[in-house]
Length: 557
Ligand code: AMP
Image (cartoon, rainbow, N blue to C red; front, top):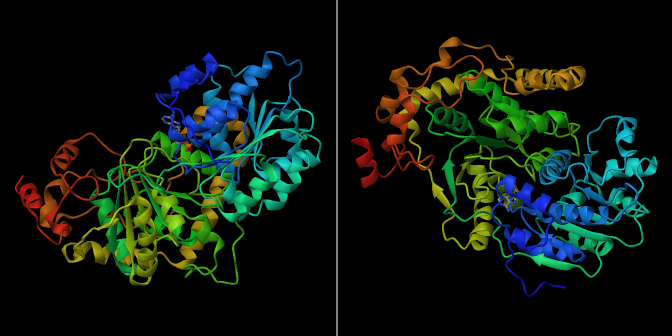
């Protein structure tokens, strides 16, 4: 059943409890997003709903608000505390994020609506103690929920009112199909259900048949990505040898500013790039599915709070696919990855100014997920993709697919980068790239995992008592598996191309651990004077093939 007659309702017109309205106001959500406008009234009416919505559209609020409203309403008559809602999501990160959203939305009624996230892989008995209290909302991955249902620590048969499955298309690709089917056996005969999914794939339709009854399907007319007026797409043709040099130049000369996520296609590449940038004292944080989930979540939340500005992430898909560029990874030896972790999909990185595809993603869906990390809400963003000769074909395919969905003739603008003007950077980069050997990468992986596990396990108790220290725990520390050469930290002026000399003088001298923090200084003021560069509105004629009037204007400043 497709929904006809949409009414444009504001939050206060949706007959929501005052406590929810206050929490919404505290979040600064002045109007419902399209999906919220459509889904909230339907769910409040008790309808089953299948909503197709991309991440960033406010879909969590679209199901969380009616769930909370229903619980508050039922609480007026309820005699017993019971689990009323089960929210399933395919990754721990997503569960963490959904939980956070629920906590925000129940901030004014937290005594009446209790929510728990049972996705962390702690001992079942630890969570049993929490589930004994029968929290109103349980958020979990399908596997974890099933484990508790089997252990009788979670019972839904007599109490559950609403089931939500978020990122439903991923539930299948993460191999949760059987778990979901099993979970359904523990459901009561009648319950309301909602599915949220970025795509309406065949698998989602199968899931819909299993879970939903007479569902309203909300296929919102939203483009997959924000419009190009909000999210600009650039490509920079570069071979693998030059990609690292270009990245180093862009970061070191601060031509890329603001929070940046750099995507690569393998875990090894994450570390290779981190160790490469580390030699120039450019601090970065790694995010991949080998790291413990709580650390990944902590890393994302620190990134969101501005503790650091650069994250290097590998894509889940690439990790699973043995045919991807695995120059450091023998095809036969697939590494053990955490299937409940999805790095790019669904996790809410906030205020990201740039996405840089160091490796071009493997398909359009992946491009959308990566580029969609920026230009959230009403913020502007930039996606810059490095494209090597062997990636041109896939780039063309992605472009063709996206052009029609965004109704744009030219999706990608060319970012012309005159490598010959920064030859000195290239030499340095070449040496530094070569210095990151396979052994250094392997050691770095081990070291990072060890470091993070020590942080997360041994110090857990300590951090519980001393939360401030957890806040100060950073994830962008240097790994030091490649010998650092002190001269690489600075950029001598003879290396800097003429048009950039003026600000290069003002680039702050790097500190060992954390050179990459925006600073209010002379440099920033000068930098702001230069406008129209594809990245961050700066334009340096040195990097432009064609010298338009704008660039001449800027040069003369
Ligand atoms: P989601 O699609 O649920 O992951 O939400 C993406 C982002 O949009 C989150 O940072 C939310 O806090 C934010 N958001 C959700 N609903 C609204 C709204 N009505 N107005 C403004 N921001 C919102």
